[in-house]
Amino acid sequence: MSALYVHIPFCQHICSYCDFCKVFYNEKWAWQYLEALSFEINEKSLQTDYDTIYIGGGTPTALSYEQLKSLFELLKSYASQVKEYTIEINPETMDKEKLQLCVNYGVNRLSVGIQTFHDHLLKNIGRVHTSKQAISFIKEAQQLGIQDINVDLMYGLPQQTFEDVKEDIAVLAQLDVGHVSYYSLILEDHTFLKNQHYQPLDDEEDARWYAYIRQELKRQGYHQYEVSNYYRYKPSLHNLVYWHYHDYDGIGVSAHALKQSHRYENTKSLTRYFQHQYLEEDIELSRQDQLFEKIMMGLRLNQGINIQDINQLYDIDFEKQYHHVIERYQNMKLLEIDNGFLRTTELGMNYLNTILIDFLDD
Image (cartoon, rainbow, N blue to C red; front, side, top):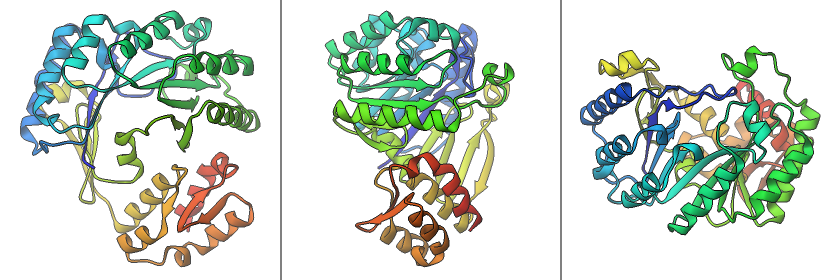
């Protein structure tokens, strides 16, 4: 499975929890950015037959209609064989013309940043769309024939209650979307909420809310396949490339790529990117780095890690090498081996970071 990630850093508004590489939309900068993106594409030996393309941000749909069209034209020759073509959108940045443009260029999956269906909570985190706008947009996209829609939701937001989460899931049930990404609010450095010293849910409350979300989404026919991701019809092919630790390409400011034991990290500086100095770092990953990252990504999946595959890839006896960690967490009912896969139990999902630290230390 071959994958291409494209980063568009522009946003019309900056959310209080976001630490992604982003800047306020500026028409002149956006055109400069597309020119620099074209330069990077021409400089690199990109494949011409990607299975998945994912345009993320920022807010890619903060671009104007003409700029969005130019972006799709830049990517057109790489999308001829694409199975899954995703673009991230915020409801307030979309209209019928932009939506039709996406369809015309082969986009067949939308990832919609909603976070919550409560307008007062949206205002608290710097979102400017309304619940009504979000619901209306999803129905419009479905009418245009885009059935593969992901909705991003969050819990642990400022002033959010457990009842609010219940109501969010009730609204979601009416929308018949095929995929949900449901994240716990994490306070990242240099975000507004972190600077305001906002106190997130404690571990016990977080676990209670998380358990409820998993239970309710399961009741509605969603299958959890990763810590925060659930699908009704099919998982995200693009994200599975990351979680299965396969190689992928990345272009745009702050984008990463993983190719043949190297991680390439692009600059986060828009100024440097405009000057065509896109590559920030080329990190050669040691065998041990790769092994740990494979474990880290694999344990995020409900399926877990294929022990036979990891033994063949790294020429090890995985169960023997990590028997201290595996046995410790098996005894605590947090890890289990089933049908050749090591995976977290339902309870173990809550302690994944602790488990991973022990794998790293071991």
